[in-house]
Image (tube, rainbow, N blue to C red; front, side, top):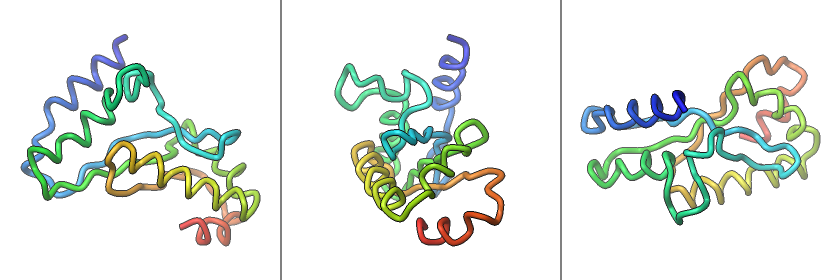
Length: 130
């Protein structure tokens, strides 16, 4: 698929030695599991242990040990699902715990929350989540 080929080619062109931090965009939000998941099958195919674009991305740290990799969550297509997560303190806590497991498994150093069009109604919940 063209999108997958484009993503793989773009990743191979990253000059990791010029950067201190790189952000991988995006992981989707799965509101029914209170967690995050890949946006495309090639990012983490689940068939071969520790394979896929997310693992290729965080493996850039092997060439540049000072590099920090960050997983961006949300984006325009998945941001609406934050509203389900922010519905209760229990959901927020479970979501945060599941993110921690997900990024540690894939060797990311942190997250970026890209919640577009949030509105002021979720301000308190968003601060609590952070």
